[in-house]
Image (cartoon, rainbow, N blue to C red; front, top):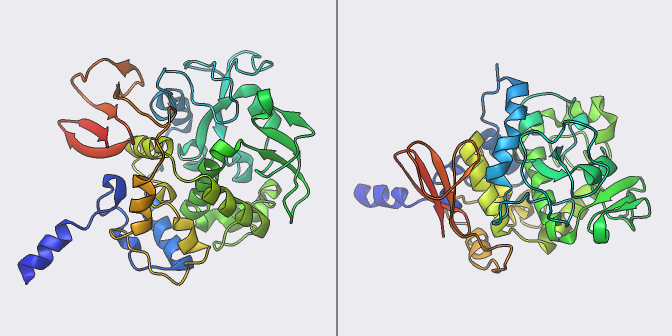
Length: 341
């Protein structure tokens, strides 16, 4: 019987080859589950980290985390798809034309947590390369839904204007429907990972108040949480997000559980708060990943990247990151991380 128990234990694994990463959250519910996840994903020692060096490194990291198959920048604010990767897009006065330059965007604005503060300032889970002009139009406004009377990006892909969601009437930025779930899961991650900091952010940085509620739980204001839950449901986890989550884990060694476990938000804020979470027997997650629709954008042929972000034709000596379709980590051998179905 002991041998059987050991065998069963060996097979207890989370999705996307996360292994026992989420084991400490097993059997937790609601607010307790959120706190347990915080303890798991907020585990990086940023003390003494060089903020400027870490922030500069994002230009390179984006080549691995946010590259389309043709090598161009995967921008979720603009649909022009014309930008290629550069070492530093912040130099000069560019950004007067959409599709010309990109920023290191804090999708959860850094003014909401005090600016250049680690680790939030360089946390790749909420950092994205976004069109410089569109990002400047967004400013520090919260996400929301709007008619876009103030600004619309090319083709009306994203919009800025008065909020039309019940509960808030200020200016908001609305991303395209294609990426609303991505940003919802990003915000779920932020208020989970940094739940112990939320009260301070709310009290000291007024721009955060439309989005946060000032408490560790639920963390998000009522109107924002309702809207983001809807966004997450209408735009389920995509292969793009799975690939990116794995790539970010390879860089900063923490994961976004709302990507690994599609629908996890329901266990924390929704209609499953009285249901115990199981990290290794999460049927919704397994079904959600296996049923992902294949599309031209979702298809991920083999791509190999060196640590400096350069795309390689074949693995070379040292650490490389190989990404295949659906981005599932298979194994690590001799410093080579492989990602496959």
